[in-house]
Image (cartoon, rainbow, N blue to C red; front, side, top):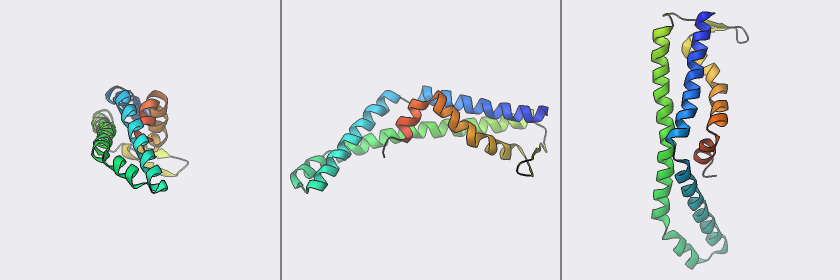
Length: 149
């Protein structure tokens, strides 16, 4: 039981740290400004295509390089979240290796399976990470992941 609590605590700590670090690392104000400009440009482009207005389309297309740079900046902000998650995953695996004995197994009655730390990590993190990201870092989540729809 101690090992199960330790494993769950490691995963919970990783999820909380992930959410907090995403909120701290991502420049939300910059990302919002960029996403708003990208969306404005894409709307103008769609209108030019729908109206079949060549002059408007050419004027809009002149801004493509600038918009592509903005999209790249938004993608860089998104990439920061991936690096944070990956770094915390490595840290969590090392922590589990130190705190949990080798051959650590957990029996999961509803699934009728026995799993190790990685299996337990997957089961717990599937519901815990999205929940905590939405609670702690909702603004980051909305700007970065729902930016271009």
